[in-house]
Length: 211
Length: 52
Image (tube, rainbow over all chains, first blue to last red; front, side):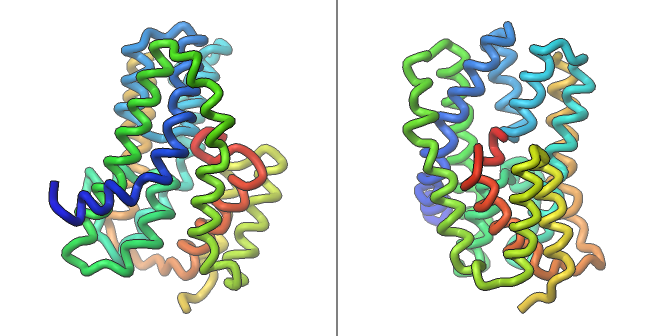
């Protein structure tokens, strides 16, 4: 593994801490929905987008036609359309980078990439994404095999992702456009419209001028 | 189910890939910071978006 990729992989530890227990919960949900371990693992291996994976499996378990459930999952993922363009000043997106671009990888990359030499950015990003992807899939595997004992991890490490987002958001907490957009997202989140709120936050951010 | 998983996987990939790949005339302004702050506030007041 190249040095920048290794550094990115190691820098992914907060994501690993946050992803792993959630992925275990996803694997357990898949079992409750009567999916085989192979089917559950295929979802994590191919989709790698937590919210839409939970929506797909949860809705199918309730009797929703799978293709309709997948369509609703896609709507949840529309917010991801903003992430690549926001990273474009620092990194050109290829297929592999795009596949690994989750909410958390985006937020961490936006913080770290601007401070890295241009030639190291791609490998660092891939290391970050690889760490996240491996932890997500390992957690899914253990959950799908019925590792009930790990269920408590979701509560024990529930703070990890909010804490990570807090650190990443700190430099932007004086940015009025970002605060307004965040406020809108929060209100919609409390109304049960999380994905819509995040899409609107991205759209509001478009209106602000780059400092 | 397999078709649905493939549909979701391909759609998600295209949503992530196409806007990143093609430099448009879109000026992103403060979209990056806005999304990071939104992700923090949303995760602080409920499940993180990974599993919301």
